[in-house]
Amino acid sequence: MNKPKKWIADKIKSLDPHKDYIEIWRLSSSYRLDDFMQNFIYALTFPNFIVTDWGSKAVWREDGGKVLHQSTSRVEQTGSANALWWFYGPNDERTLKSIESINKLHAYWAKKYPGAFSYNEDYVYTLAFSATTMHRLKLKMGAPGISEKEKIAAHLFWRDMSKLFYAENGQPITGYPNSFEELVEFCEQYENTPRPTPERANLVANAIYEQFVFRFFPPRLHWFGHQLIRAMSLPTTLKTLGIDPPDPMAAEILPKLMGYIFWQMEENTDDPTESYIEERLRMPSEEKKSIRSEIKDLDGRFPEHFAQKYKDDPKFIGCPYHAALEAAASSKKSNSEDSFVDELEKKAGALD
Image (cartoon, rainbow, N blue to C red; front, top):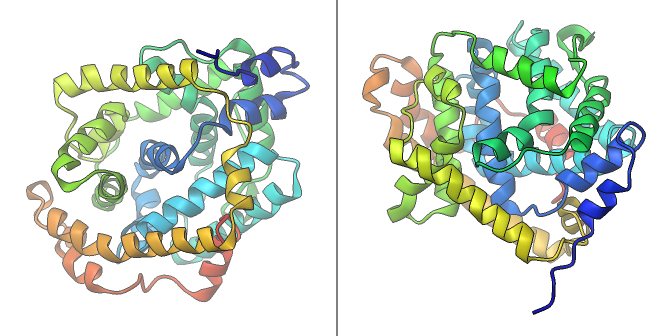
């Protein structure tokens, strides 16, 4: 049996994290991705960013927004934008254009939900969480965290990224932590801050989890998909959002199972020679068209599925947004969207 071809770790070992941090981040984050992993990371990540009333209000809006009406399209646009940033880095024109579109989107929604995009700590948390996600996930799965070299690179990469975003009214982001260890500390403090349960945040998170399960698991295994995503999620986030924790056995076994699967893949397969975003960008137009068609089909079927499952949640009796869920789902598209928003969002994707 031929030994798997490994080049990524060897390349990282040859680099200086203080000088080559963009390349180290690219190597450590841009390979071994596919649609399942992109969606899985999205489902584990985004609910942590809407634990506040103002954050969830700007996402769910009055009718579910894109997490209900274009659920898988939102995953594709977010995942491909992130993959582009990770691969090309904070100094590349493609990244700059993508993030400028994100800033313009935030400014657009800030006019409709004043104050929702003004909290500096929310931006710092998003940046800190992004820098530390893989390290914390590996620890949760019982694996060693990322190397010291990768920690330095992650901290410096996202430091540079922090300079590209701005909060409401063009305010720059301040207070980015001074080390990787401080990034982790910032995340833990933010996550352990007691908060009330925003009703719309519960719907946003459930829609994100349900979209992942709806897309990748047959109906008979939906229960397993939910146990998996909850077992891998932060307990503090589940508690704040009013979502039941995983079964104790699932919480114990499933992270270790995921760790074993990832270890087997890393040990017994060749390192990819092409990144996820490179594969996306060179994809023939007909293949892109086919993927867009599949996503459109998922988007079309999801709202009714979600409404039927969550409209009568006994924990949220009296919540106007749960009560209006069936009516919102019957709408063909979120009435909050317009052509300006659609155009901005398309600029972040890789299937257009």
